[in-house]
Amino acid sequence: MRLEKKATVVSTSVAGLLVIIKMVVAIFSGSIAVLASAIDSFLDLTVSLFNYFALHNAEKNPDDNFHYGRGKIEPLAAVIEGTVISLSALFILYEALGKIAHPSPMEHIQEGVIVMIVSFVITAFLVMFLNYVAKKTKNMVIRADALHYKTDLFSNGAVLMALALISYTGEHLIDPILGIAIAFYMIYSAFPIIKEGVLMLLDAALSHEDIKSIQDIIKNEPVISAYHDLKTRESGSDIFISVHAVFNVSISLYDAHLISDRVEEKIRKLFKDKKAHILIHMDPYDDSKINLAEDVY
Image (cartoon, rainbow, N blue to C red; front, side, top):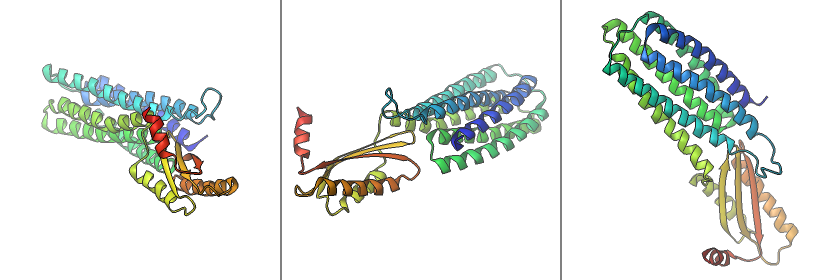
């Protein structure tokens, strides 16, 4: 089993355990903050299960129906995960505002503190593990999952602080106010996940830094006199690059092909943690103006 899939299995198991613990305490204590954390853990469970199946399908080889593979499942999973986080944040916001309008005292606060301490410690270890996997694999789904659980870590810490303050001051408004703060933080953290996923689904180009690195490799190849139509896109763990390279008209096809292979290998080394699919079109002359004219008409 790939490391990414193992990570989703671990995160699913941890989320399931936290859901049970938090929901029991939320029911007995009546805490909106603990309920918010329990709901978030339930959504974590759902999303982690979805991530597992997304990674399982994304790694399938290209076939007659999907010539470029199923890598787009990964950004789709990231968009869904970000959307789920945002919707859960809106529900927490609704519950918190309702409790401000109709306040009710909390019970079993000390039990809630113990549960949130346990939850904080477990989540901290999970975040460290997911960050390790994300750095090692550069996988978008795992990075989104790591960021998701990192927001849980912060929210668990905030809930723990709120319960301690309520226990010390007796001011129960701290609970819904903190719930509102957690909701806004969740929406804030979900935005970059959704944005990155949407850009990948729309076939956005690679970063300017990556494109410049590719251009430098092509420019530093003395036999290539010019290039045009450099296009890039990313699909999960796959990167697709195409470019027209201009060679001297007298060069043999064999030699041009060897040089193209050398350029492709250099470009692949830029993306060691990705699968780079590179297509170099070998031109005997610069036809960029002709292609531009055809595009206009």
